[in-house]
Amino acid sequence: MSWLVTGGAGYIGAHVVRAMVEGGEQVVVYDDLSTGNADRLPSSVPLIVGSVLDRPLLEQALRDHGVTGVVHIAAKKQVGESVERPLYYYRENVTGLQTLLEAMEATGVGRIVFSSSAAVYGMPDVDLVTEDTPCVPMSPYGETKLVGEWLINAAARAHGVRAASLRYFNVAGAAAPELADTGVFNLIPMVFERLEAGQAPRIFGDDYTTPDGTCVRDYIHVQDIASAHLAAARRLAEAPEGTALTLNIGRGEGSSVRQMVDRILKVTGNEQAAPEVTGRRPGDPARVVASADRIRAELGWSARHDLDEMIESAWQGWRHHHA
Image (cartoon, rainbow, N blue to C red; front, side, top):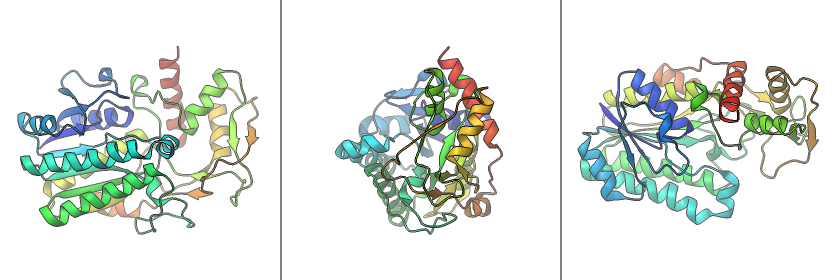
């Protein structure tokens, strides 16, 4: 098998590339480098710089490298930005995926692992979110991921494409400092940024119907995300035509924002810094925790890394990039 990884120079993509290369897979990266960094890639991995909206270049990449499957990670992924720029998000995430699927059909590539998101669920009122929990996304970003799943499932039915849509929960950590997330959009780097500025970390709302009043989330190490992609790719290599899997990637364990902030303060040696509670953010559900039963049954996969490993590796990465 030879895999084209779109978005392979990004934070998650680079981890997937590393896991696949170490697993003995042939990999080619396709990335527009709008948020990716070519320095994250092993020197042995070819990089094609281009947009997922460029069908001729996609077809050329698939043909020239003898690609037999695609891992599609490239996407715009900021919830707030998607509310402000919905047309941009639909073009990049939906039209981009459509263009990729058309290029795959034209070149006879029949396997795709799709990076989806727990954002497809919206605000589920359940203890554990299963893959059968109703999807009611609350942002254009979440909508584009759900539409992407529909597109892929339709291609599986009509054209025999073998597909796996992987719904990420809250990704954190790094396999190595140089691969760390450089954005400040998620809880852990947001706390790091506040601490570095000498400010108290913020907790958005402590009046939710949870044990300590703060939101509960399922945090998963990016290395576990990467190993799940490798497991899905290997499954599709042997799967019958028309296979269409939809799988959560999570630990199946919830941690509250307050618990996470306390752990971050301990790991970074800032236990004296008391967090500041502010108002709720619009659209934050009280609890979103994955059921990981289906992915365990389908792929024999389960998460291996714990919260402290996520935080410690993320902290090492933060210091590497902010030294």
